Image (cartoon, rainbow, N blue to C red; front, top):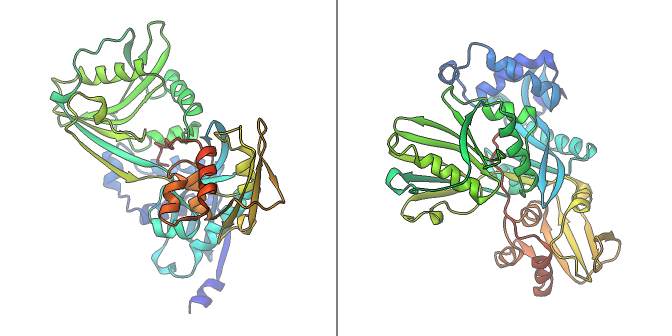
Amino acid sequence: MKSEIRSKLELRKLSGNDLTQFNDILRYAFQVTDEQLLKVGWKQDEIKRSKFPILEKADVLGWFEEDRLAAQIAVYPLQVNITGSIYEIGYITGVATYPEYMGLGLMSTLMKKSLENMHERKQHLSFLFPYSHPLYRHKGWEVVSDKMTFSVSDYQLPKKIEVPGRIKRVSESSPDLRAVHDTFARQTHGCLIRNDLVWEEYWRWDVEDVTAAVYYSQDEKALGYLIYLIENDVMHVKEMVYLNQEARKGLWGYIAAHESMINKVVGSNYYNHTVSFLFGDSDMNETIRPYIMARIVDFEGFISQYQFANDELDEMISFAVKDSVLECNNRLFTLKFSKGQKPILTDQVSDNLVEVEIGILTSMLLGYKRPTYLKQIERILASKKTVSILESIIPNEKVYFSDYI
């Protein structure tokens, strides 16, 4: 029966004519109701029209049965800063299958085809927010960043912070706000470079009362911003971005100025360090959970852009990569390091051998888990010397990724 159903299906790219079906499958899969849309200020059919740019700018593939959409996957063409180099990436979203088509392998085919398309477009990395860690791990993605949350009581807020600059509340479309994020992203490992499409998604589900505030230095230079909502005596911090410590102090001083209006401050933190350590009273609740997953699409292309931490090395190291989806990665790669020069790929084989799956390799090179730890838990196979080399060449930086698309 399954083979009969599969034989009737057609795989093709979605177009503007498929907008209604694109919207319907998303609302069905994620159970978005009219009541929820009205709560955040959306009028009837606005959400459908707002999704049209995705079909224009993204690679959206779907399985159809007699022009009825059965399953789909969307890939945004975006950019991310990895160790100081700007990478073209494919960000996977809009993954959905109607339940009557489950178990036919439709999504596996869509993922493989999407990755092949990314490879052709020279998008060397793929990112996504997972609804199922096991599913995406099986296809080569791995966790590369965490999302931390915090809850600060009003009496714990910092007192009398003095900074030379000032805060100004601005509109959502403020060029200063966007400029701060762009500067921040281009100097922060793992941060997404937000284009117009990403900014549209950033504001899509916010209620009207969300406020943006920018910190300006004494000479009127924008150095940081805060996106927040005050509701039921609680300040909800959506995002806090700062380019230096002056801006960080200024933003927290601005939050503290609301002490008489709120009982606590809650928010998300993507810096991979605890907020509590910054406060005199650190007795507060903080949580951590895995957030974004990524996978290398083309190891050869990825490594050619990668900024290693050590240029004083004279060594070779071989990676025996296992990739169950993309055959181009499923082989041996050897990197030759020469002092003062950019490492190159060579056909030689080194005694410094690392056996690793593509997802774990991605997580390691993006700095989420260190080589020593991965060897300890048997996620990579390598000698003690080889692990030492890996520790010296992989930058000790954590991914900052705050977007949900």
